[in-house]
Image (cartoon, rainbow, N blue to C red):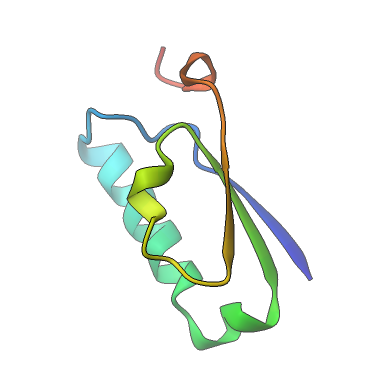
Amino acid sequence: MKIAINASILDEKMDGVRVFTFNIINSLINLPEAKKHEITIFTPCPEYFKKTKNIKIEKISKLMINSK
């Protein structure tokens, strides 16, 4: 299954909602079942997911950040 994750809320300012969002995404992509799926994360901060294997990261413009 193809799964797309909108992580546009993530930016340099990691406050409560952003930390929670990052932790949920990180937990999801590290589940053993995640390897069976094609996961793409759309984020303005791809560096947060650098160490992630088997996950496609698409950098989006910082203008797309929800908090702006």
